[in-house]
Length: 301
Image (cartoon, rainbow, N blue to C red; front, side, top):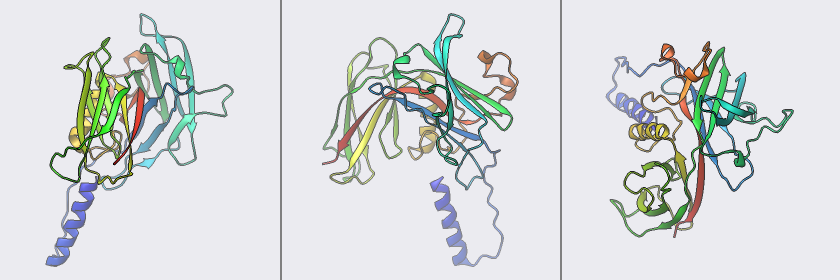
């Protein structure tokens, strides 16, 4: 989006210099407004409760930013372990409410008749979670599973450069879980993300460098996270990163519409068939994922 705004200013500047009197019409992408769901929940298992925050916004025109959505009629998370038929047995609900009026951020309702927070001890790799949203007479649903991760072995500053002497090398090391095929999402701070899969290092210690070009100065602190990811979320993030070249967060509107895992389920009787083909063009943007996170901070030298 930033590139488009800069280009628009450049076009206006050049137009002023050449005193063009013709009306220039620029065709821009047109799309119906859509919900945008920032549903990445980061689970710190050292805490008693999960920090649940679902951010709801809505796209407007091509040149405008997304707007918070405050008039959600119903939003909750239903979670538990499934039986052999894919049905959650003895599940629990976490009813959400807007944190502050106009914020578009939804958290467990503190005024409910019972505690709506999700305990970290209730989550395992077998836990299925549904996000259910009712908005403007439509019903939306997303399903995910809790994805565990591994901690960093180390996060250190390197002394190498790639193309620019102002770049800062950061070296990340971790040991992969040998018991399953793992997909990882790294939050490298400053709206930079990276994905990795363990195809070539399953069960092994692995280390890699990346180069931060955000003009870091000695004494600056960066926060770097490693999160577990499903294969679907890994693929989704790869598509966004390819389009944005690292310039967007995972739930900002990308250059083209990338479909996440939230579907319109209005009028569907069997929720397990929620990804119905009859409403292929009616869906929100964004993703619902519940991932264990390990966070490290690094002070730049």
